[in-house]
Image (tube, rainbow, N blue to C red; front, side, top):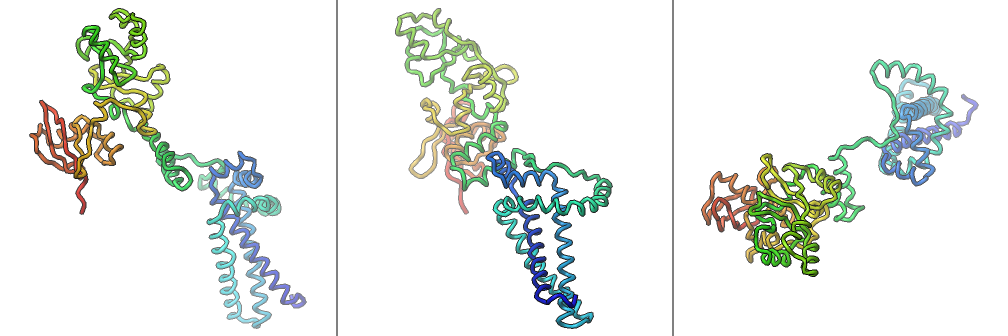
Length: 423
């Protein structure tokens, strides 16, 4: 090697360090690529993304070529560093030790840490252009890779590891998808993120959580005088009304207010004609997930169903609008019975009707009442106290001071809810 100029050895060493850096940055960037983003770019026809996806179809071959190339380059760089050190400092054991320390430092700083940090920080910006070079590199090193794999494959088989196709994005659980949505907050409007997160809850939320309770259902009694029925229908707050005979346990069906008003307009309203336009009731068992109920509405071509318990007793009523409000937020005009569930007081507290749903209070007022037990504020208080409280009774539940304002019979009718105590 005496006939090779020193500058040529130094240039060769520099080139080898660059090659090692190339292998290091390529390995890190390719492995750090976002597979979902990569698949999106492939679908858009991006050439670099298509090549990168093809390389990632067999990560064992890709990593094998990169590691073999990097190992050969580092070995060559170490050898040349030793030759340069001997030429400059003479042949001595200490010289070899110094050359080892120097080349290790250079490789760690310039060929390992720095390029890998860059590749991990900007994987897409680095990997897609390098995909054009990695293909020829793999073909160039294919003979060496084939020889090495003669020893690697039996070892993998012994360890029961089967290299596969890793080009596809990994399967995600609902919780992982939720995390992805939350991490997209800087790219998506807050309202869109809220809607997506609400969709994940449709399987966890049941019709019991959003139904209109039995005592709040706006219904028409067929046994009432016709004039009274006409007046009630004309002033109804809903487009569909429940129809019963005598009491709510004898449900006849539902009717559309528009159809009744059409009969009134043509002076054809009679009890017989009214019964002709009544649609049969559609029942759903308590505990049905909202997602399943939404599919039921789609299949039944209906927008309203009656929730019954295991004994067939009517518990409440749920509509398609109730489910949609769980997804996109409140958008309908509700009746005074429903909107009068709470009133803000001058001191910042809320006067809340006992039958108000806890989920509604959490969503509209920002409270954090537990939802894994009773559905209403009345039920929550009764479960906590295990008795019917007297007016002026105070209790703290989930950190919220509650004062019983009014009770009636076996239920709490009105409650003053204060903000949670701080400190």
